[in-house]
Image (cartoon, rainbow, N blue to C red):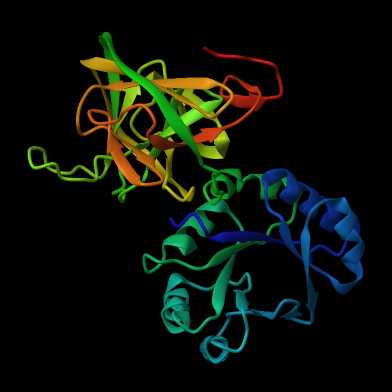
Length: 339
């Protein structure tokens, strides 16, 4: 699933204004910052940093239009809008995937984005994967705030991570230890991997084994992740210990531009391996992670990937920095310093 897909909420449905307000509040709490509203709901702007798209009889502000797909004629009309609007929102209807496949194929390369209304997360995931590319966005079409919150995993999968180059200050061999190798059900690209570290304040981007080295074949589904104690970033921005992951668990994949997507663990292998301690600074603090001492283990940086067997003092690698601490994997605003 592409992580850059936009998610909006259709907050124009309920006749009761308080219910429409609750939809927007729940959307903001869940990370959705764009809402389709009625013309007389402009005052919802005061609820937070939210972008309101005004629906006036199916014509929506910012060059968007809502089209209901109930008949083959509706499909023809929707297709005729390609290139005429910035966004076409396919309204919540009892239509099947086949019309959506036709829409996606027709709209490619026209400059018009296609959004599909979804009433539950499973439906949304199907639309995001249709014809592999999927729709450009999801319009959450539900009745209550609690229903909006059910999309939290999907919403987190579309977030973008801010990555910061940090400077390597040292690398040294340490004792043998238990290393976790995470095999996912997804093929990862160059620069893509997982955010892992010994301190929640700094998670390093460890690349998948997506490169051949002449001796070992590439395994793009795998991240040789690190020691059992390490944190790894998962869905909803929560961290878990590497040792906790099991087959079927969702896990977050991150590329070198900070784009994210959610995959699932196929298996985890915990084996005794020689380890190294890698330390890097953000200019204020020194952070660390512990990795297997093997040339196939690489970290992503501004200049590409660097093997731990070649990394040296002064090299720049990507990391996710954050203040505060973690409690049972959840971010908390508390003075915690892990060293």
